[in-house]
Amino acid sequence: MKPFVHKFETDRLKYVYDVNSNRVFQVSEVAYEIFDEYQDDNSSGLAERFPQFKASDLKRACREIRRARKRDGIFSSDRPSRMAFYEDRPVEDLIVSRPHEQLILNVTERCNLRCTYCVYGGSYPGMRKHGTRDMSFDTAKLALRTFLSNCDEECAISFYGGEPLLNIDLIKFVVAEAESGHDGRFFFSMTTNGTLLDPESIDFLRDKNFFLLISLDGPQEVHDSHRVYSDGRGSFEQLMHNLDHLYTHHREYHDEMVSFSTVSVPPGKLKAVGDFFATEPMVMNHLVNFSSVEGINDYLRPLLRKEDIEESRIDSGILRDEYLSKVKQAKAPGAFLDALFQKRLARFYHRPKTFLGPRLELNGCCIPGSRRIFVTVDGALHTCERLDNAYPIGTVESWIEPRLVNRLVNDYLDASRDCLSCWACRVCSECFAGLFKLPDRSAPALRWERCEQNRWDLDKLMVSYYSLVEEDPSILDFLEHVTFM
Image 1: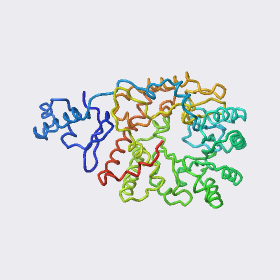
Image 2 (image 1 turned 135 degrees about the vertical axis):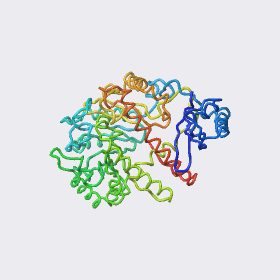
Image 3 (image 1 turned 90 degrees about the vertical axis):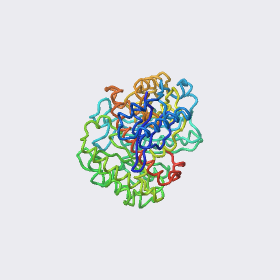
Image 4 (image 1 turned 60 degrees about the horizontal axis):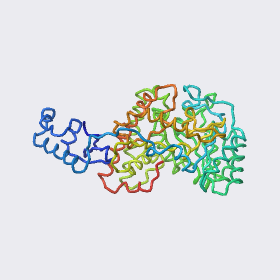
């Protein structure tokens, strides 16, 4: 078989990413060209297929590849033979051995906005719609009590919707119950569209030191094209009015505890969004959580126009060049550029440079019920807020059920067989949430759609990474201390 590798090149040099060792090697032009056709002792046949190279150069390249395979074990044709989840440990053992880290309560299905791309907007097969249901106090109390019985001294409790501020009474109840029933330290957080951040709610959130993740897609033209009220009015002005109050009257809290969630729909106008986050005083220098519907919305992606996707990719390339330029000059790229590129660079930087062997671990997947527990309004437990339409893992009464977790894991393994032969299998961060968004569609087919985009992104990532390393081998050492989960 051919070597299990991926080729890519920068403006200067040519590289081969070796899957089995999870390492990257600079190679000659001749070696680069023949890798796709290489098999041991076939240099004579290569001469016919690559007449542009001298026979002596082809033999030398083959000899170098063969030597590397025998001496260092790199450029092997080996593929893993099976998938595994956390070293094949029983799910029951994994669940009981890990304390809970974060409880996410879906306190309401109500929302005062009707964002065009929202998965709860009624256009997505298998997904719930905006509704009128709120989580009951009894459901929240039971979920909280069980969560607190098995969490560390530091516990994270988050509130989700709909728009969670529509049920702020329940949020206040949960905070009071948590503080009175546990001696540890709490980290409270909320994901909000920001339109209901009135002075009273801001005072409460500030007093309880809430982390706020506020949905803001960019300048008004971009934000109001998708984040709208039911009558079609944009929400930008109301959001910025509320943000101004927070910024003016609670500056320290605003600067330390507010971050932004930005969703891009192609064409996205990413350059304008980047300029907005770099220059608007109320948002600049704040953390940004960036996502694109190409990566998170499996129903909308096929409906996007190819020219819009291409425009987004062109904008992304411009911003990537800007990011690389600033890193080369040791300048801070800014929160938005970091959100676009730094996390992925950090994940690649920290990849384990070990040999693969016959077993491929699900490197993007968490242990369900450990890192996050998402509770729906009716008390069903899910792995996280991104996977709330399929594969429940328990209820607030039964808590986490190993049989349900096993079902999720086994179905995911079954749908991921193609990963065994994919060059990106060790650097891909796909997880349960990405695969089972649409339960009425074939999981393998859905996987394939997502994978093409992921491989394109990873190829561009490697090009960016080694373009920087060519400038200075230590230029990315700052990533040693960058988190990327």
